[in-house]
Length: 585
Image (cartoon, rainbow, N blue to C red; front, side):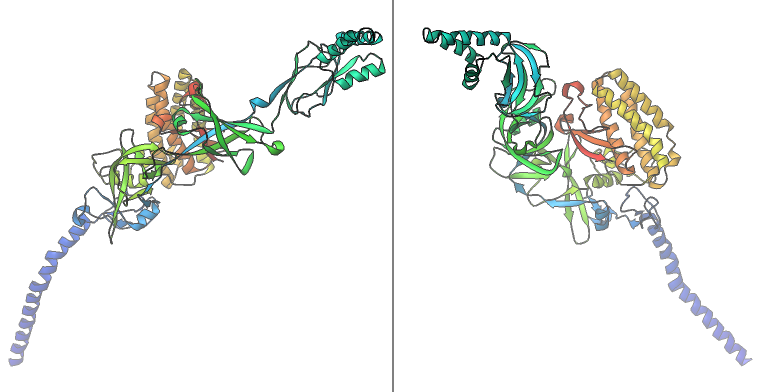
């Protein structure tokens, strides 16, 4: 009985101890754990450092690129400027973000020019005949033939010269009685440009010479042949045009906007397409005071010595003039890649960093003159600040997706989440990644590019009606492309590009005149350039060409099947304005 009572007391004490233990520890876990779990599930958002549009409440891998998701930092809890875009070092590396320190330097403008080799106009000669008659024999029969001064070019039969020789022989008989008559007969032959040696040979032989040679007055290259065997010619008539190309002119096209930067005496460095890996140097000796009314360019002349005659007339050349501004003080200069231009605002991203993170803050700047690959900054930046010079569109895309102020949304907006098949902003579309597609996909896209080239050619020809027809053809082809043939990230990329293309083509079709049609053509070109660069080469070489004068001298690109520049943004008005930026083979 006593043992049973002892057991009951021990069991009661054990139960009581467990009860109090549960009250102290168990209830605490039950009350805190759900809250922690709830907070973790509600507040921790996972994203991809390469694809910031991905948002997930659970950790894992990115559905686009397969990278491990990282926690999305909460700007509200981390302090600092709420407008800043925070990026991890890994995200910066993957987005190819590069920065540089703002500094002052002496502004030097790089003006890029296209041109051609031309003959020196001062060394172009017209070889004429001083004797009237019939061409009996030609010794120079084709253009391009090199000749030397004094060389026989042709033989001519001249009845007038035969009669003049007869007069000379008669005058010789009475030379002692009438020396003036003899002298006059000799001078008549001299007036036909016969040399003293030729005249003396006629006198010594005392026989009439029926054919006389035409001698070259200068050395050079025959650029034009004006006669054929058997032709009758008059005194002074041009037989050949001869050019001395030991010295040549290089005529560069200077765009209207670049004329103030190119001055007489400027040094020019240029290359010739047909002579790769060689660089030539010269100096601007003359600038045409008149602008061509059709091409809107003026010619800048460089005179070059041409040993070996390696530079041939009509060769294409590309040159650069580095022109210093008149102002002597140094100014803030930043690369063009650092500046995003919306048409109304110019923006840069300024870097602010700490030991734990890197942030970027969008800032408006005032641009000065364009210096080729860089801009002068008038206002908005200070020496010593650090700005993004590469990957700026990736930073801007992250800002837009986070709902913060960006290039296309100055006031910010709702954060973008989830998988989007819709259109992309301009800032997002400028971020290009290479991805491989098969021949099946390329075959599906090929008709779309062919229709685009028709549209481009119609704009080149200023044919508005045909341009609208080509835009409609592109729309029809675009709607027929099966989105299902694109897989993985190529599918997501194609959906965004096709959506933007569809909208821009709709704008193009609704235009009323060719000037309006050229505006959506720019974005249509941008989309196809991104498709080409991301998906790789098609079945033929495609040239990416650029005109620096479109959009108030901010420039625009287009695609072409030929290297020869035919500008679709200006047509006949400025047909040759532009240059080849890249060839996708």
